[in-house]
Length: 187
Image (tube, rainbow, N blue to C red; front, side):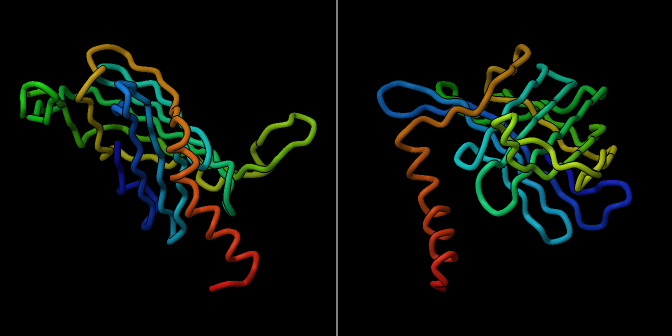
């Protein structure tokens, strides 16, 4: 899902999605992300900096939640969209059939975005929302872009990002090196 036309916001955009990919040795993994740009600040929840989960109907409802628990901006984001329009069926690449009508899109989804800062709670031994108002409190739009396609979109799909090792550590390495350089004052 994607939206960059939120009511009352001039500079707010969100892109979120989930999918399954093949990895070596015949295995697969589910990956997802939520990325938000708000007034020039970028928020990214991806498997190597936190967690991501989604609940998507075969058509009509998308709920994506992401948490970033690593880095300088700790946050939780939730994006919800509903679409009562039938959408447009489009061709998409498939593994065995080349381009096939295997995807449905619409830019008429009712979309809501919320974003909260997180902090570590010693008692809960987990990250919790910071007291006070959220960074973004239910920003809304009637111009969200939504899509299903590729599979398993023919049924409700609930999943949690689960990037396997050693890929997770390798992808996170540049983030860790960048933080170390900043701590040491190395440009």
